[in-house]
Image (cartoon, rainbow, N blue to C red):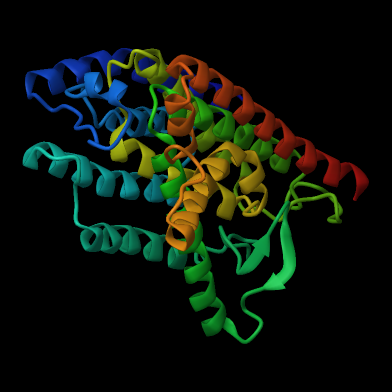
Length: 360
């Protein structure tokens, strides 16, 4: 528990005091945000606001995690390193995207092909490595079974190890792409994606702590009430470090935002959610814990699909938060209400997670 507190506390302090320093650096270099021309007109005033704040979030989370390892006097586990790898790797892709926007003075960054190649490389290497590094109990960070609250009987390796590896890589990269796009789409209003992410990563701190206390590796007798997760404590520490970094960053990202997280932050956070869901064996549960992200993605899917079929729109503008903007809601009102909904989804997910343990 001390390591979790250290991770969150250190990352919070680093983000809180490091963000204004990074803002000054970005302002000095004239690295500002470009705004899409077809968006709400109120957003034009945000043009030039420093972006790439995800650099601070990633850096603070990594520093917080490292500090917790120093306090615990041990080396990080394979699961923790894999989660950090996916977060940092996608953050690098997002950074290149943000930097391209700034350098070329446009609202579009990397080409779709370059972005897919970058995300694909990070996602595939993560997927392959996640099935390696067995511990003394022969348990690897991830498994080929589809998971809900724990691994289910639906095993992708039903036709052999090779087929299982290929199907797992496809499944894992689907999750990585989905969560990255979900956070990226949510990052459209000051503090929105940051606040929603805090609720999600806060929930995963609790998931990791509970799985640690009920781990099959720690209990004398394994049974339906224990969890087959390789490194639940380190996953809780990673979650706490990210949550702490987000809280510190939110101080400067809340309306009116002094800095945006950019694709650097949104892709990194999406990767972290995907990694935690895969490594904690809660792939489907994550869609409930992060329900606010799912709703925003679905609003975009519905808008595009309905328009292609009927040439008409369901929403005034997608994603969903822009619909409410154009309906006359204030930005702060939308953000706070979406935060509340995100908190309810996280609580619902935790309730389902705990209820399954009680009745099992």
